[in-house]
Length: 348
Image 1: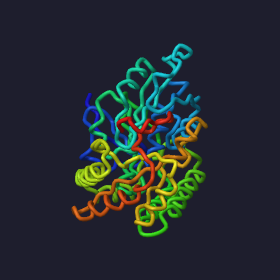
Image 2: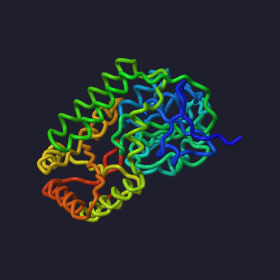
Image 3: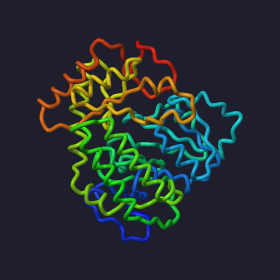
């Protein structure tokens, strides 16, 4: 039987133009309060004792999986084939594969993960829609990363999900909305300080309820904000910015759907300061990304330059010029998320 997109929970299904556009007819797309709620729901539905998780990733990922009772094993991003599989029972292991700023996991990682209990794709830094997820694939994401709304996390399951009641506490939604409001104005002043305050608000919201053991469905506010978004125009505008920026910097073009350009430098803080002087707040993604102590050096040297959506070519050119100036006179390389040392001769 064909199953349409629906929201889980006791409230009526969401009625959002954006969500209807993204609806899948061959599976459920479940809309939740955040990406971590989608991850919690996936962990509840996937029968796995052990989760293999990249050593550099948003700290919410390991925290949520641990709250769901999982045992975690770290692996170097992009090097899943280094895992000593002989010591593991694959049938009890699930693997989390990272879509890094829009870059799909490598074929090598997918091959190494074969025969695991489940493979879950983390697409939270990908500008895209659930309808693009191949059928039979577990994937979760967070539309608020590019819409700027208070919620709109999503989960595409490979299998039918159990019916789960997911409350939508109003206080939680209000706190997360305040956090999103701070993030939306951080480019107008004190970028790092506002980012830190936004993170604190998110953490406060989670403490209010406890980091999810039961996922929360998307709020009415998230639906309202999502209704105002044009995802296709957003993606095209970011693409134009990425093409101009990568051309200026002489690095390989980003994938369609990328949300940032990650650079690695021992002068990371100096570059960030220069970008701030030019009103570009390249907040370090995942300040707590080294969750297992294996990617400390990489985490301390990593900076993610945002890829904004502009309305006209002059703004795109001005942004690319500002980034180019900020990177001048410092040693840097474009980088994938990988805990290993990066050879400057490597193609990004």
